[in-house]
View 1 (tube, rainbow, N blue to C red):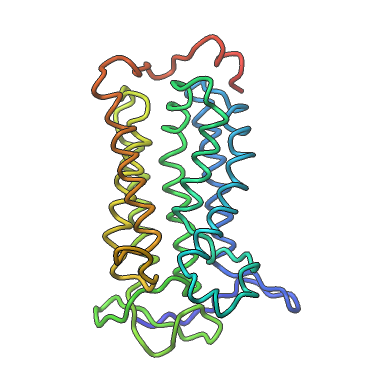
View 2: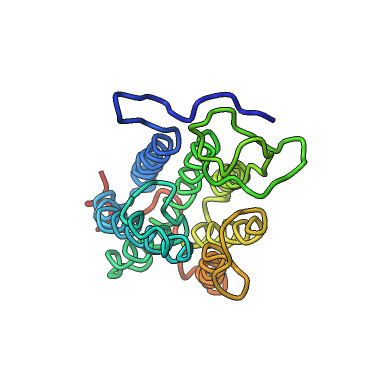
Length: 272
């Protein structure tokens, strides 16, 4: 399947807006907007969530960049000047996700139950943001997988595409992850509202982590340790943490269960 469109959405002189960067920002903005809307509906504190985002987002971007450089250390060893080029395709999704979530959680450490409930609201919207961002990568050609002779293997006609080469059909690994993110968004949204707090967030980490590990052999990322890619190693850590985080409330029925639409008096005063 040959994709004929240009990866450049808009060009003004030497400046160019590419699909990946634009849709990554669209996905992030959509996730923030939906999360704030859902927090209001759940009568949870938007102020607390925005405070966590203010600290978590830059931390996630910086750590995501560091993890990407470490994962591709042999390339950057020969191209040291590119270490400081902060492109959207040079940020580790799992590095940014875990680091951002850790800082976010630290900002909400005084109220573990509210933190779990906020993470449950954010989790499906984060999956949607991941899906939208990977669609941008697919349109641009960034993150293509190994060569393939499958009917849906993709080639890019534009010389500006970020594909590793031309004329070689490859797995659309970006599209695979986009479909996983979209399916995860729909499933998490459809889960019963009376689930204990933390189950949705835990399910997000487990499912998306397992998907990333499974898709690893189709990607071009170099092996980092034990024959696994850096993203796979972080995803395995995310799966382990998500399993514990999501299972604990289920093992203690009622301990972290809150009826939909109900909130503490403190949250009532902070919501909106």
